[in-house]
Length: 373
Image (cartoon, rainbow, N blue to C red; front, side):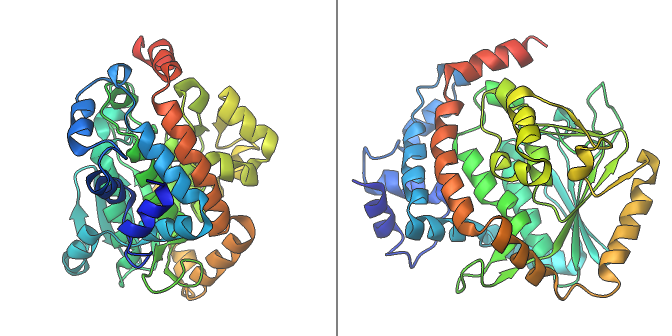
């Protein structure tokens, strides 16, 4: 059974949208032996990463082949840019109350802004399976809310002993959970085809190509403490980034042994090829207040002035209305990263990340660079 034939059948000749996890589940059910079954995956999920058999590599090959095809791959990207069904179910409540607590994510309407706060305090606001759905639901609601014009992304105060009580933007992927085998391979694809791409492209409409019509708002990031790994990747999708003067960015993907989402595609646009390679391949730290940091961050402020600066930026962006924001975002993307370029990148990413996630080198890197700490 070829991947494209399976996709055509499962999507009813691309008239039905399926998210990547649902697509893999249905493919395993309909074509036994083609992809690992739910029972096999459930058994694998109980094992630490070092003891897994790597069954999910087949999912990577399957999704890579689909994404590599211009027609099927674009359709799959479109499916992942649609609002989640559980987001639509929560929209009426959020419109009425202006606030929703999703556990690891909190969303609140503040004047003309929807403020999304990342909350995983024990793990320095790191991303894991507990944050994945909550983050995408919050992004959907922030974009769908008719009462706000811009969105703000910020990390909450953490409880980790070294930074207790301080706001931290985020520490990237939860390395504890990664080592313990609690993060599945599909997590990466759901994340980067889902909410991270929604930051950059907005929400798609079922009836229109994502580059023709979409529901979009400007996103403002407030970076305090640090943005490591996946949280640094997120900054590359923002329209405006405000950073505290003592904050810094890193992409320690080589040390972790994985591909850093779409950073390989996006970071060179900000800082150039040399600095991008130094950051991704040689663990270069980028201080937000440095020359390289200012290529990513729009403004640097004293840590105590972050709240005031956010209010100022929100007022500046909304005082004259944001009627052209979506149009200008689409125009920027046409030149810098059309959906076709993203689709081709994700075809490579789906394949290579599957290999990296189950590579012995990842285990060795985690044990050498993280576990013994």
